[in-house]
Length: 193
Image 1 (cartoon, rainbow, N blue to C red):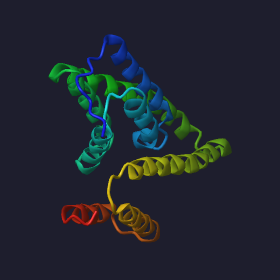
Image 2 (cartoon, helix red, strand yellow):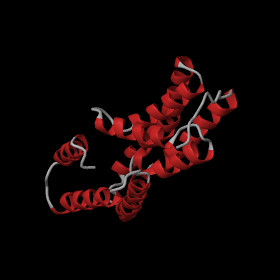
Image 3 (cartoon, rainbow, N blue to C red):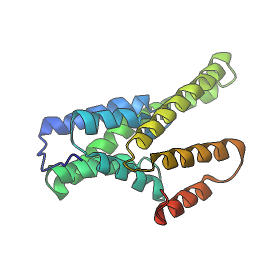
Image 4 (cartoon, rainbow, N blue to C red):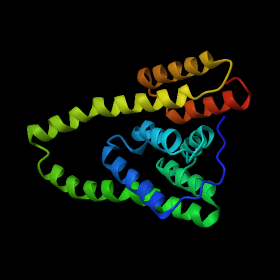
């Protein structure tokens, strides 16, 4: 397991963090979670600003918390800042990562939604919306693969089984996802997974 000591980020590193999330903002068609594999590659594998455990914990905590699921990006920035030297860098990390991911997509969404609504009857607009569905599904599958592949357990097959059963239940029933999250939490609490 890789340990991160004080990494002491420079101004250019913070700009790089901001710029990377700025770029990912326009790629996150299915939400920020759809670009999680690229975030993992950049933050954990390339820059070594986060450990696997910090990366996975940030995503898990944000997904389990009430509020928008984009909070995992704030946690990435927070953890990078804490690894860099404490509270002030942690706040800088939150601002750099959140403003990077929110500025372009928010601006684009505001401008494009008016245009798309005005021309919603056009075939090209309807085709564009339908064409995005497979892209979003593929990005979410790759996200699931990254998260599941990092499991360090002697019973990895059990994690894959729970994932498969959950996917089938979501696909074939109208059971609220919160029930599946509660079931997963209970399985983890009692040590089954």
